[in-house]
Image (cartoon, rainbow over all chains, first blue to last red; front, side, top):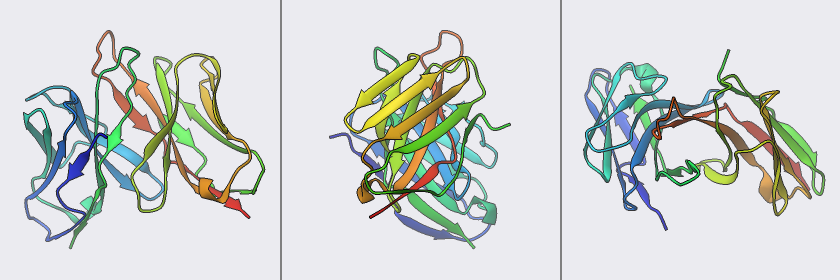
Length: 115
Length: 115
């Protein structure tokens, strides 16, 4: 089974701190994604990456950056955490299928609270 | 206008009934369509994908796609209490000839199946 592992299930940080959220997948997937999920807003795409050292902005990249130095690892960085970044963060990965079957495999999520 | 829209619900149906979940999308270039199920406190999991106009059946689930009207729906026959969850509609966008697409999610519809 595909496994997508996020480093922390719960995280509490202070305003202004630099925060790193780590995600590792074990199925050699090309694509990796970071979403945040907020009540009533669904999943919103922050950044995604389709190859090592490649990144693309999603719909809400402001205040975030990403790093993909190795194929299996995709990191989300909050440069200076703010209270409006309190959210559930979900990492996902997928492979490029012949039918563009973008089935996403999700990690278990990190609930980040910024105080 | 949101790219992918769903009624947030909750949609309440009695056990054994048919649950009908709807989703509309704004980008006519969308090429792939997915339904994810998310239980409370868990990550989303893929239950259906559809790429062509018409119906696609898988067990008790039927996905319907109408590209002209830009809507996709999910029917759940013989609904069970275990189907109670949030159902997320996702639409795949692949700009130009790129394989590096992204999935855009709706806000989700909460389904409650009452015994």
